[in-house]
Amino acid sequence: MVKKNLNRLYLTLCYIFLYMPIIFMIVFSFNEHKYSNKFTNFSLIWYKELFKDSSVMSTFYQTIIITLIATFFAVIIGTIGALTIYKTVHPKLRNYMQTTTYLPIILPDIVIAIGIIILYVFLNLDFGYFTIILSHIVFNVPFVIFAILPKLLTLDNNLFDAAMDLGAKQFQIFKKIILPQIIPNIISGALIAITLSLDDFTISFFTSGNGIMTLSVKIFSMTKRGISPKINALSTLMIAMIIVISTITYLFKNKENN
Image (cartoon, rainbow, N blue to C red):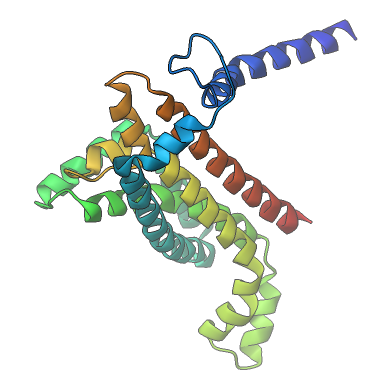
């Protein structure tokens, strides 16, 4: 009993240590005082100042555009990749493909970013919207694959055999049998890709061109000029967006499991 209580206490302290900085940042985003050494009065002044800042709003719209385009193509490529791995008959080849798909998830972001930069320089590509969107697609595809693949591996192959016996073509099998069952996983993969694109800093920082940046890069550049309360407000809004997306993703996964 004592050991169990100690474990709970240890876990509670770990959570406090992890989330206390975030809680302080959210609280002080509503602080009327310019400096974060004391809380004076509750105010939304820094949120108003944030939305009046044209550079921040421009960066926000850029981030949304980059995120949506990258997510769209990552979902298409990830779905095709998951289907390809699933359709691979040889077990050893399938395991090899799954293992190699894990690598971009395991590797540090800085390693992926440097590798992408070397590739772009070798291909003589100009850094801009195309390079940063392509980088986000490459980064998100493995996460989409592993959001869809587990569901595919649980499907009953007898359904496909029966459909083929009845004269259904491959596209009809995909449209009528496979797609309806993996739609929750596709949506989960898309939401994960959106969250990762919004949150990513390293790859965006290294692969964006002049005048193009995401919110995470914008926050980093703002901190160089000093900690402004607008950073607290912007970070709080980003956390709120990620929490909402993560909650929706959890609901879809829970629905799939049920």
